[in-house]
Amino acid sequence: MKKQLDLPGLALGCWPLAGMTRAGVTREAAVETVAAAIDHGITHLDTAYCYGENGESERAIAQAIKGRQNEVTIASKCGIHWQVGKKQTVNGHPDRIIQEVQESLDRLQLDRLDLLYLHTPDPNIPIQESAGALRRLLDEGTVRAVGLSNGNVEECRLFAETCPLSACQRHFNMLQQEIGPELLPYCQSKQMAMVTYWPLMKGLLTGKMKRDQVFSQTDSRHKYPMFRGEEFQKNLDFVETIQSLATQQNMTLVSMVLAWTMAQKGITTVLFGATSAKQVAANAQALGCHLDDSIILSINEAIQQRGPILGGRKV
Ligand SMILES: NC(=O)c1ccc[n+]([C@@H]2O[C@H](COP(=O)([O-])OP(=O)(O)OC[C@H]3O[C@@H](n4cnc5c(N)ncnc54)[C@H](OP(=O)(O)O)[C@@H]3O)[C@@H](O)[C@H]2O)c1
Image (cartoon, rainbow, N blue to C red; front, side, top):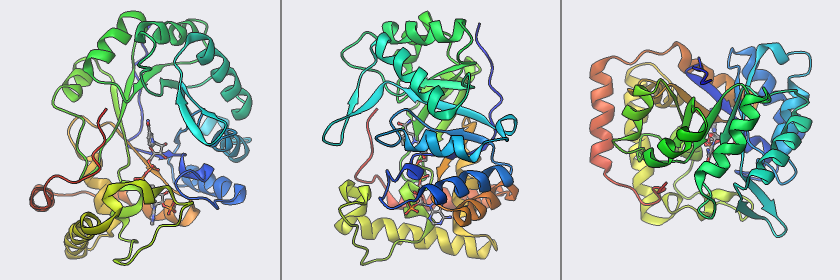
């Protein structure tokens, strides 16, 4: 039976904890980051089998929630793994899914997951077959609810013929609004949660990036067009505009960015990544922020002025 999820508005995404956005995040910092999130009332944690080549994200979460398991809800994802040579591979074969979920539970030291997503549809396997494996896990009680990440409406429909869907996960931020016109209404009509990622555009919308920023080879952001050349400079112009709106409102930039994202119609949960307790504390301030209609209008005008950006991700 489908479970209607009651996810909170703001949640911690645990990809950067595994040193995936940039190398050099220690286990100690990862554990402190998760603990700080729980301390600030951010108790939904989003991870995946492939967050870290050896499940570093899930292992750090296990360490951080020891004795606090009742305080958190945990989502993980299956269907992407690492191959030798640092290559992420999509595999939604049912056998592979069952094996990954067992490994995720072992790493997390849990008996069951609150939410399990298929990380992305596998183009080589009919989605109903992947959905069948998640249905099995749902029926046997290994997972409480199931979601589809990076899927479109048609894929959601096909998936839901085999396994009840409680959530969708897609990227969304001020400059990357590619969810499309159909998916949000579909989720609303089916009482599904819409969980979004990259609200901070991998750090760009926090205002911490410098005009002459150089990303090292161990910082995955060097691969994205929005962090390069003229495109990057235009994005920084946009950040300056939002920063001045935030200053006028006596708000931090990061609070304004997260509060705007949470205020978008149809979005139920916003996942932000972080690599320190300090970042979590700054981002948690967004929980107490309200943006009135006139400021939302000014932000939307700035977004329109910036126009389409390079690096939009098609899903
Ligand atoms: N379903 C999917 O396919 C999918 C794909 C991507 C992400 N996700 C999920 O969504 C979550 C969010 O995405 P994301 O982590 O990639 O991107 P994000 O939330 O847009 O950005 C996170 C990055 O912003 C920086 N940051 C955060 N708070 C900050 C603060 N207060 N001050 C300065 N910098 C700050 C950190 O950079 P530094 O690393 O430089 O400290 C962090 O790595 C992920 O963690 C993951 O759980 C899902």
